[in-house]
Image (tube, rainbow, N blue to C red; front, side, top):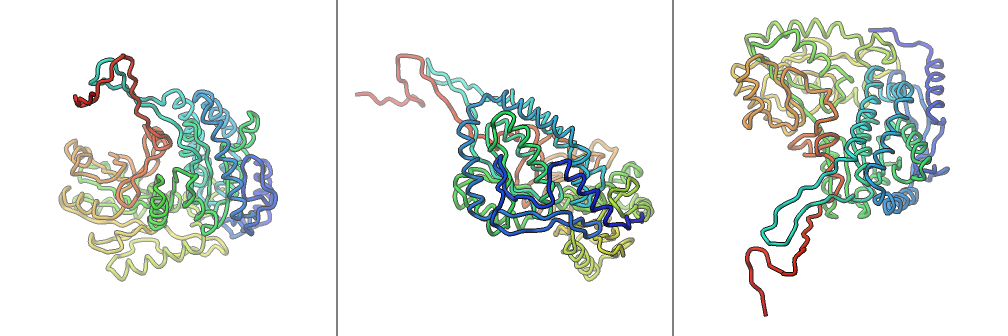
Length: 519
């Protein structure tokens, strides 16, 4: 394990410098609609560095009246914003991307300080925001509708797409800024305004992003397009879910949280876009390249300390290759450098907080009770105030009940199988359905996995892991993962309403289906 910085005061000083460059003061207002609310009335929370437990800053939270002020600004700004031509909205997205380029190093460092993910991943998350901004610029000229042939002479049919309104975005701690961009930058070019409720575990990165948005939007007189409101779930969160002024809620989080969001929003006949838990499996056949497998699995399972919704949780190994790959993985896991995420040599940082550590330890106790064998790892690391654990490999049998649960930690189950059909059956036998992969050099095996009787997930890969999705493809999953799709492809349609149009350019009035209704 790498040596953690011993001087916490120096770390705090470095954090303050980064936040100052990003415009984040030590105490910040928790709500913004272009202009910061100086004294929101929802109390105060602290943001902590999970590497050493030090306090990074304190944030004032929004109360109900602060939320209402932000929503008022968002809904009234929408009335004008929706009329701005989409390519002009795309120019705003371009400027946001340029601002993010300039802020990449500092914002990426702040992501690392607040989440504990290694610096390469922190900066990579900001690069993902930049990529989404570039995608949104092109999308602003491609919000296409279809034309259809009418059965009635002298009639023309087509469909067009209009903005929805003020869209609510609820994000999670593990990707505190990238997931916001998947939603906000796409919604922005679609003509929507956005109200963002970030995780209370990562408020400072949200405030930094809002400062960037305010600079760009303020230059063009568009304060109120992208808005931030930070508050407790039972105050701001509950109000957002039940607010009829918000036609769409895009929420990222656990399956448990998704049930709450879906029921609340459906109760008012609103729309939801849900990105919930993943319990991702990888199938490895006897003909796979073992070195490729080990490299992909190491990143997919231990990256972000197993705190990705796309982290590899279950590894199905065909018996002919299981022994060799297990040995390679054990050796690789023992070499994972756990420690200070700002150190370039570190491969795995801490879990987000003490509760995450306790959840992992409870999960390991259940694993052992159900017959699982810990092959390596499984312990806490004595680092003082930091929340560090060992990446863990578990030899499991396919019918352990805990395999159906998602433990948000670096635990990887190794399960041996005989036939591909058997492995696919076990792979699909979980409530979640986000990401999946197969490693094979056999075309028939690959295509079987990708067929209708193969993976039941929203993402299916061949010879790459389950993490690291590119922004050009629609991201999301099936079953209890929620069914939502964000970012690329035609995901933009979630942020707009479809309108079917028929124009009669004749002097007659024929009815569809040949109906006659004449006096």
